Amino acid sequence: MQVSQTRMEGLLLIEPDVYPDERGCFFEHYNRARYEAVGVAGEFVQDNCSFSRQGTIRGLHYQVGPFAQGKLTSVLHGRVLDVAVDIRFGSPTFGQHVAVELNDENHVQFWIPPGFAHGFSVLSETVVFMYKCTACYSREHERSIRFDDPDLGIDWQVLDPIVSEKDLAASSLRSIERDFVFDGRSSSV
Image (cartoon, rainbow, N blue to C red; front, side):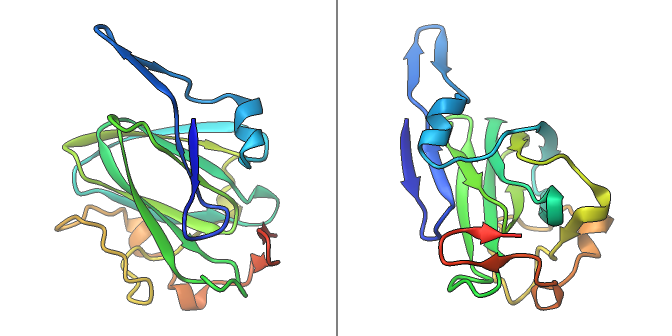
């Protein structure tokens, strides 16, 4: 597999070795030892899968405290624009984002450690989006930042987005608490 660092430390793009033949293709979706060796740390305790239609935006979500999540994201069918926003106070890239296209042809995965808010928009007719999490979902530890916060300036590449009421009621970046502090190497809680 090929691993590349994005412009923000800790955010990794992982391209698995894909073996195509006349039947289709095969690739290893996850191997704990190989992923730990390239910096995808933490034990995965929950897998989530969502089905969404074109124009949907989900996010920007994160969890705090003992339920802060690292996420390994991928697309099983379709295309998304996957976005991570640095919410580590003191980070030189605080409030900036990285956006990558994930799809069922490139099989690229996106590693998003704790300290980043996460969201995605659906670029294809439908999508099956999967992500492995290093902590279980906790409603009381869940937080959100509004997807269209002008301070973020994210181009979601969709017209007339479909967004949940919960995500429409999310906070602005300027109003979030200092749940994550940049320590010069990674995020800490």
